[in-house]
Length: 120
Image (cartoon, rainbow, N blue to C red):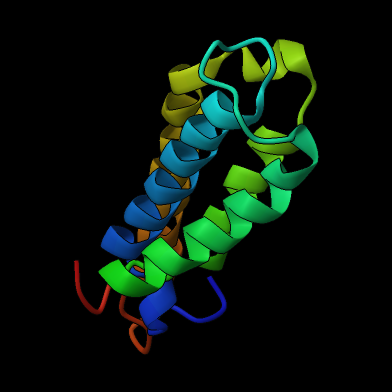
C-alpha cells in the first residue's frame, strides 16, 4: 500500500513469490521431516535451506517478493500438526495474497495520483 509502483508489489510478483515459497517449503519438508520416508537430510537444515532455495528460485524466475520467503519459513518452522497441512498450505496463502491485491486495488486507485498495478 505504501509503494504501489514497486516491482515487488505487483500482483503477478506477489502471487508468484508466495507460490514459490510455499512449494519450496513443502518440498523441503519431504526431505527433512522424519515422518516421511523420503527424509534424508537433518531437520535442523530445513529453515535455512528453504529460505536460501526460495531466494534463489525467485531471483532466477524474476518473481522477487521477500514475504514469499517468509511464507516458506513459517511453514517449515511450524509444528508437526501444522506441517501436516502439506500442499493445502498453498490455498490460504494464495487467498491472503488475493485479498491483499484486491485491497491494494481499492485503496490505491481511489486517489487520482496513485495507480495500482503498474503491470500485471
